[in-house]
Structures are given as C-alpha cells and as structure tokens.
Length: 322
Image (cartoon, rainbow, N blue to C red; front, side, top):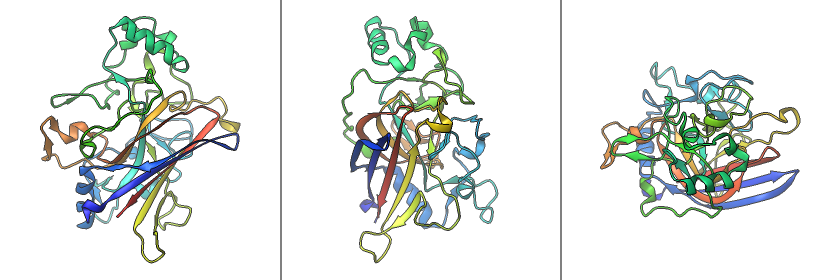
C-alpha cells in the first residue's frame, strides 16, 4: 500500500477577483512519508519529538516563531486547538505524524555572498526586498548566523548550515533532482525574525524562523468546509485527503501590514508533519533529524514560479491519494 501513496498540488492566484495564476501537477511523496504512515497504522498519532506552532506566542499582532495559519495575517488561537496533542494518549506527545503545514521557497539561499558580480545580480533582481539596505558584502552576511536562523536546505556533512533566503536571479522553473523521494527540505524557505506587523529591513530580510503555513482545523468533526478534508473519487469510499492553505492578500483591514511571503517569487513547495523522523534512521550525509528539525517532509513539488504581492492571494490545495 505504501508504494501507492501519491499526490498532487493545485495552486490558484487571485487579484481583484480575477485568476492571475494557475498550476497543477503531481508531487513526489518522500520516503519519510512511509515512516509517518507506519506510525499512524499502529495507532501512534503523536510523537514526543518534533517542532510545532504550539511552542510559540501567537495573537493578532504577535508572532514569536514565524508560523502562520491559512488565511490569516498571523497564527492565532483560531483553528489550531484540534491540531494539539491527545491528552488521553500521553502527556508531552504534541507532534503529529500526519501532515499539518506547508512551506514555500524561492529555490535560492546563500551562506554568504562574496563575489561582486553575483551580488550585483541579486540586487538588480530583488528590488522589492530592499537590497539597497545591503550596501556591502558584510551587510548582506549580517545576521545569517543568528541563532533563530536555523532552517535551510544547505548541509555540510552532518550539519545544517545557516543561510539567507533571496529571490532567484531567473524566473525559470527548477528541475527536480535524480532521487526526489530522498529530499528533506525546501530551498530558500520564507523566514522572518519579526514579531509584529512591521516589515523587516536590511540585515533581517531573508533570515529567521521558517514561515510554515498551518492548515486550519476549526472543529474536531471534519466538515465539507474543512481545510483537511477526506474525500473519494468514486463516492464509495475515501481514498484521498486534501490539505488547503491560503496566503491572503493584504487589502482592506490588513492594508499596509507586513506579510512575510510578499515580494518573493516561489518555486518550491513542501508538505510537512510536526514529528521528527526516528533519530536512528540516517542517510550517508548525516542524521535525518538534523536535516528535518521542524518535522518530516511528507511530500514536495517544484512548481511554476509565482510572485506573492500584497494585493494578491494564493490558495494551495495539496491532495494525497492512497
């Protein structure tokens, strides 16, 4: 059965009520998804090791860990209580083996910038990211090694390296690697060190906590409007589940407010669970928990690039078939 898990990602962009972007295609379900499902089939729904939005402080105006919830400016109390741990199982088991969150990336990240030609190209192709605030190499490299800047897709032996996320200097789509089922992260993930509605400047742009967008789940009984919805292809039995997240526009009451995805051209998408992979499972390059510190990568897709702006919203529907 596990070899038959498949999925697809559908993304729709809207501006002023009109569709400005549409992309749909198959994803790659990772090897680590099998690990997740094996635990779920034993009745083990939650793990005591992982990373979750429950660890942060969230409200309508404060966001201490960068996490977001579908359709909202910040991750607040609405819609998150039913992703919490099952107290009847065991205290401290707060991390789900099933997918809960999506993160998007530009496909481009740097440990540092040292080449003048490379740096000039970055400045020219990232006007909305205020590259003028990075007037020198040292300015660009500032805060990359901040303790809160702890998630990337760049590794050295058994270590994950700190990087700064920037837009690619091209708008072309990325090509999947030879063995995509072994991927562990998304490159150039959207990050923020900010804790309020104020946009970062200079050395804070592109570093910080990863901005996972959590699927909303507003009640314990799933309904037709749930963002985690089991359905079927043939009306006989459920054989798929669709996870939906919305990157909202910043208009109306939210006009002028900071949203971490704005200004970035997105090329990669990853569907994650909160639980870590078993610490004893290793790749030649090192411990998988080092490569997936915010939970296991369940599925991934390289998408047709789109740019999130304040006046546009994007809906991502990620469907997993079994």
